[in-house]
Length: 137
Image 1 (tube, helix red, strand yellow):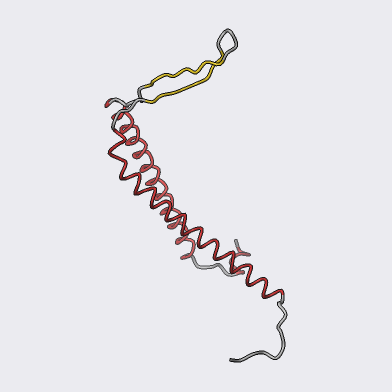
Image 2 (tube, one colour):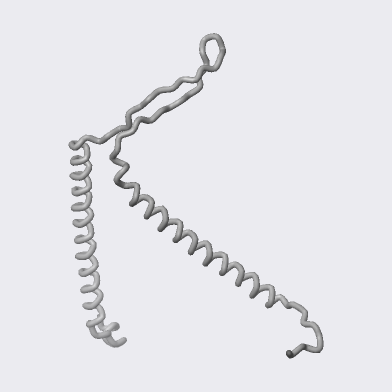
């Protein structure tokens, strides 16, 4: 093989290139692992979606002080809050109204943009006045 006759000292450029190479590799690996994690969470959420409608009972425990100064462990069962059909329909109607409002705002903004583009094109089409015409005006 080929060997250099003398050793090569590392320069600032070498350290600069290595530093940013390692940084770029770390960022790419981090982005890839974050994407994989989000995908795995999404798949798990989709798989567990049917089980969200199953009612369960939550158990809450708390420690409180009694009158004689001793700690007492209390346990209570709570039923999960389940939305009624009326509440779901009300939320759906609220979302529909919000969607209609946003669509109206979008249409208004599109109209404003078209008006601005038309005014801009009108300005571009006007002939430029010469300096002698500006003096007369």
